[in-house]
Image 1 (cartoon, rainbow, N blue to C red):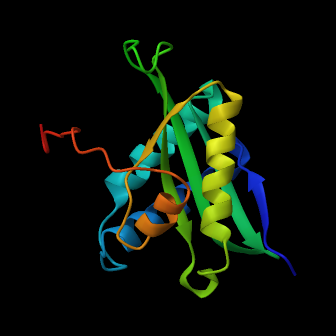
Image 2 (image 1 turned 120 degrees about the vertical axis):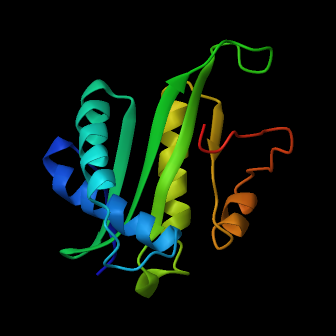
Image 3 (image 1 turned 90 degrees about the vertical axis):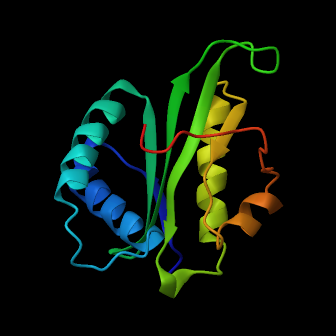
Length: 155
């Protein structure tokens, strides 16, 4: 059976929250028994509001009835610039493929769906954070490193 992708709705809230926690555990190399209760509640609140108001779109991937991947894109606006006169931006996140299904093009297809969603909404400024494992995939899709960007951690 071929894996199938579908756009998540609020009806998928419990699964979206579970997948978010799984992604964070894997990406941060945390133990399965790490207390994620605060992040779980905040994720539930985020999805509830953002899916309802359209500021986030999420996809899930299944092999039959088995969840095997996820991805999301958040939409926001900053002040207009010369290179982005609309100020609209998209941030890809939560792109994950279960280890048993990696190297089959599912992560690429997920990223493509998220980019397509952003483009459908007229967004041309699309960014993401990448793990070392995901970086070659995103580079092959045309994403480039942004050396002038900075962050103030734990502000």
